[in-house]
Length: 231
Image 1 (tube, rainbow, N blue to C red):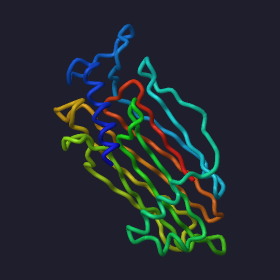
Image 2: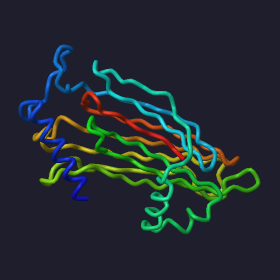
Image 3: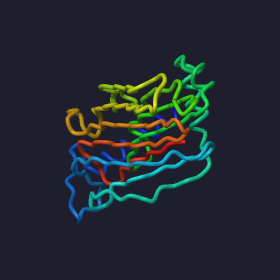
């Protein structure tokens, strides 16, 4: 934890030096310094991968302040599943989730240009099926955010989550939302940056699923990148 905070502090000091203080920089093509950009809404949709596999996407704010999407990536599931299972157990949801016939984890994260995760919304879905129906199913949501060493940084301001059906369902549509505000070295007013994450999961009786993600950014910065996926 101390190492993580130290990295955040060094990154913050370095960027302030580049900006010449805490004033937000203006985006100009000829300015080689980091640039602040207008707000944007980013959207990504992915089919759920086979068990033991992961699918993910990424969009980066380019030098011209325009989003740059990379092709979806597929590969073996990461350690996220084990971490999510541990978190579910700590939250008291492990008994149902562990016994479920189908499980799906989702992540929806915003990183800054120094590769520090600023805000994140995570989902853990589980469902059992029988006779062409979902007997039980649902999704739990958790949130994480980055704080600065001087009691500043990102804060969670609101969160909601719901399932449209949990027992004897043709399908289960789950959604989770989280809003984060920033007040710190890059903006002491607390009015400039705000990240709102939305995650949607559809669970089906045939054992398949799909994931959709959105993030709304009040303002962005060149090099910020949005990472999302499910496994």
